[in-house]
Image 1 (cartoon, one colour):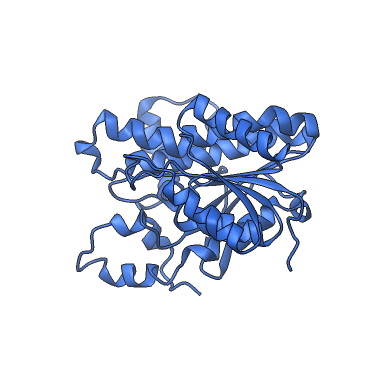
Image 2: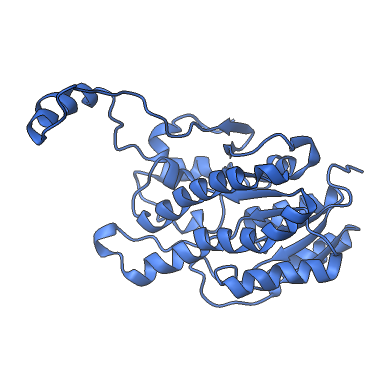
Length: 303
């Protein structure tokens, strides 16, 4: 039996279905004790039942693993701290956090309301902060710990109708990097992954003649493909890996670049609005990025 994570305790949020469920089940197969957290709501984060988390736990236990179900709302500071406390009460330790919980409320920007913005940011970004922050003092005291946060190319690259989701997921990348910086001296690491997988969230994207072919390609990228690399980052073998942005696309593992200056202009006289228009913008324009979407960048079929 595989034992990459033997003796470790891992919290996986949003683990009642899809990517999170596959991560939780594989973590248990690799020897970890798993806290399966899921609010049990729909893809918009509405409603809630412990059923999905309990189903994953039942599957883990039936296969000989150890797991508990938890229905705390990670968008809440108190909920996230209750989740961490439940893990500590049951298992006495936590070694890794996989921040996977997420919701969608896709709307074109000119139609997006405050409620659609707040709900998505609360789960997808604040939820990552809440759970990581709940674990941070323990990780600091133990001089160990791993965070893996799920970001998205909707933020790293861009996508239509996802201003709320894209902003939250880009925020997750910044959150992860700054956690890595703050916690490095305590032996704590933080990375994020942009997962490419056909899930119920992705399944909410309307099928049109223009995207029908890409949807069929997306269906090849099953949620179980995300789990191996996620759990590798949770293992002791990855103790030197922190502050990175990865992607997993079927059998491809990607390392993303991070924003760095690519071109500069200067003048000893200082700039005026006019000289910026006449000199700076023309000099920089050749290096501008296009209004790409994820599908424009990832043009090849998943391997």
